[in-house]
Image (tube, each protein chain N blue to C red):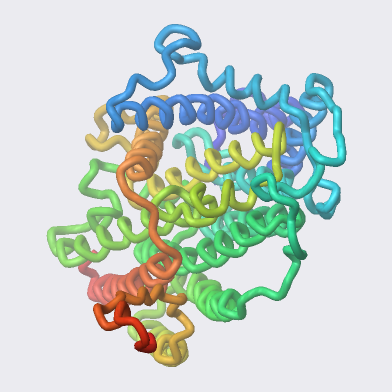
Length: 137
Length: 352
């Protein structure tokens, strides 16, 4: 009547339906008195300045791209792992070549510094800075 | 295929049995979430030498119910600046993703809701739903805190998914199966057959133990990061981002984010239990084994892993963003790849 994957689909539906039921139940009980100040964007009581939807730092996208490569690697290797014990040494060497090619790219990204998040570089004040008339180095 | 679902045996396949099969995990999640919320409050209290909640009911055991009632009564605020559709859709996406993962969790040898042969892969696939839900909610809020929290959270979730996936890959190499029921069944016969101790095999498996143990620890660390638990709590860092991606959410929508976080905690704990800690198998061979005891052992082991997550949350301070990326990409990923290659090598030598 219903396959195992049909059950999986029903799990998705039930998850969504459950959230819907919870929302409807809450909408019956809860108060609803919106006003413009309540509905304004929260920024610790300040009036927000500027748009939050701005261009974002590019390093997030670099991380996403590197992730995509490794995720594809995992997707390729999972079927490989399923039949690994039948294929033997041939599969092992093939996997090594595959991973090494990937790691070459990873080493490039690492050496280029894309995996380094901005590190704090605290400036420790020296005695000379306090001397009047001298420029800070 | 033998039956892996006692409800089919009891009631046959009809509409009501299907409803029972898909709603049984939901009832479990609801009860589990209440227990986990209370456990979180009480464990944190013990760690900090406090009493924790004591007023609601005897010994404060009604505290989670009181919190649910409180959240039910809260006004639901949708900011005028927000993108309405995405803002309202995000709780659905995040909870549906968390609940869908329960479809393949083998609670006992007699109960896995859907016994599909790509179980582990499926869990990783629906695990990505949480990242989508987070970035949806965070972006749609049109709030700087939310957007920064969402971006950080997604970069963290995807960074730690790689070591976790490689750890799972190594187990798939050992089992040649992605079916979570079969993986559990392979580990029957005592705790020395669990994959954290190299899996079933002769004495030569001692070469494997360091690698499988390392991978289990790596998977656990990565799962903490994937569920945004505290040592990796940057997306919700209270001191800097108020509440991270759910700053603008209130009432039931916030409750859904909260609920999904606890459901995800159980899912990762269940994956650790299934692939490393023997799933529903008894730690003492055939002693206390069976369908009912299987559910007992599975829930006991999973709750122990959840307890570890809570313990770590209240023990360790939060990492900085650059430390987080350092650990994920430059420590966990190379170590997990080395362990993966070593396990592949040893399993070909038939040491496992």
